[in-house]
Image (spheres, rainbow, N blue to C red):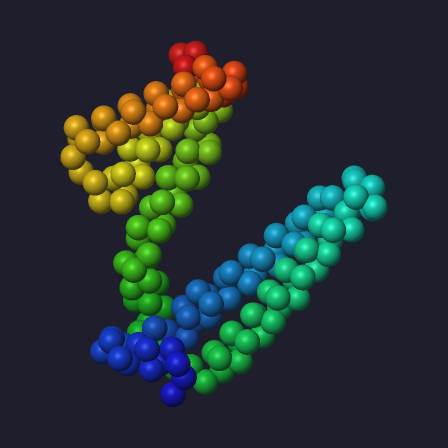
Length: 172
């Protein structure tokens, strides 16, 4: 019995499907390798090589560590057997990770919204989204905390430091 099977057996839940576990375990090392390849592809020949020694060293270390994790996970998957179907396994994992996925979606939406609608409006929307995903439901508390934080950011960065964040169509 592998450690994952022992953990899932301890919770009296059926084991996830092998293909879903493979997807979950191998996604991170594959993403690391993909980012390494994309970085090298985007910088090689565009930046002088003497400026890339350190970044390429870090990318090389990332690639070696990712390959090591990948090989270790593959070895662990060889003896794994799951009871749930792939769809049930994914649904089960989404249930466990729904809050983290929600935070990630809010962050992606925030980054996409900053330029078209402006920093402060996008920040207000993102703050409300983060509070809702985090479980806060009191509209008065959400409104007050959003306004206080936005005023603080405005005073600190715009008034004191003189920075100009992106402004949207309303000029905010």
